[in-house]
Length: 290
Image (tube, one colour):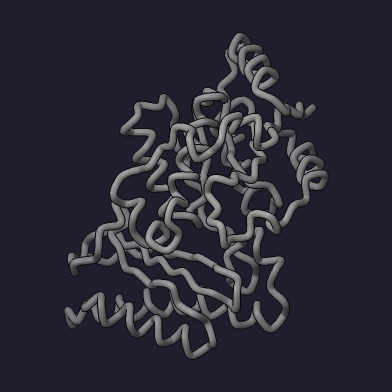
């Protein structure tokens, strides 16, 4: 049976009850409009704990004024039904005023470290402040021993790991690999915005990332690993398909520092593009041979 929790009091009552039973709890935070990528995280959570709680909360603090907060896709009833089928113990789905009883502009914010200012942080000022603030709230409220996040939002994942470490949250962060459709496009709630032609253009994003990893491997032998050139070439490939490129970045996987040509480090290649007005992100891991 899945318990639907709508306020903080009921959440704390549920948490106290499960704690008294000695249950190990895993949290899966989401913004709703669930898909197979979310359900993959739920399965990881079930393996890591005795019971799973999924939060469904469209967080206004992480959306810019020109972004799609008002039009973000919603499928709440379907989400609840699918979580019941997967035997999730509880769903925490509060209204905005429950988590932000005071004006969001004046409440305490968690701003993150320097990593929050680059890539997504540079393109979407204030976005990671919204993300880290709501994640900190949820971790504090649920008091889960495990929290599961997806690697598709890789920079977000690394910032959450840093926050948990720096602020001494007693929670283990588990990462779930990116889930892709059969055509290679990373699953996202926003993919439903794409029409057939736009989706075909969007496929250039995962294809270009795969090509870039192949190019880096080939150049490794000749030591021609100039990250600026490689990133520029990838941008040009994307632009040829009609995509507007925000960034393509080759970074060290652990801290997202700029790639300096040290070939034994695991890398993470990240990109953000626009398909007309829709913004898509993706990333891919690369481990070079020493």
